[in-house]
Length: 122
Image 1 (cartoon, rainbow, N blue to C red):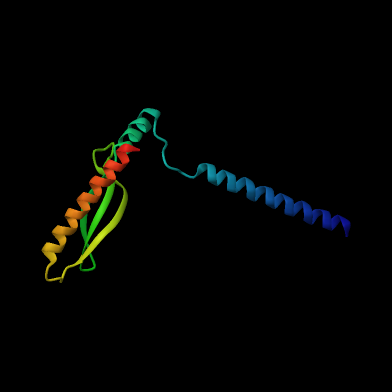
Image 2: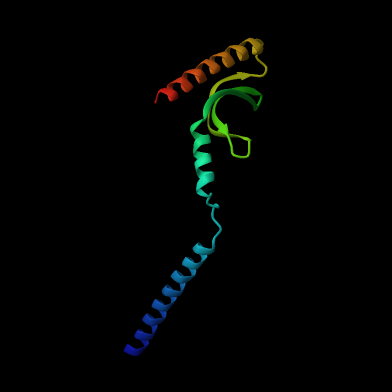
């Protein structure tokens, strides 16, 4: 009886050790994001530090969304958006769509200028 219990405990401990070893090997072999060389990291940090707010708009579910976007030019020359906020929404079927859109874009541009000035101070 005692010998059977010892064998069961030994089997259980062996199973736990094998599972931990397999999980560790799987995590080490899992592909992760490639680490950039230090020069590219410095270039990316400099690009991100130049991020600015800009007004934008898009169409979603029959409405025009006026957006505030904080972005920068990536290392590949393409724009990268760090943050996006909905500033205002104008329904597409609204009779005064053009005037509402123009006013909202103007207000969004003013807000972006304010945010950029605020960030340049700090």
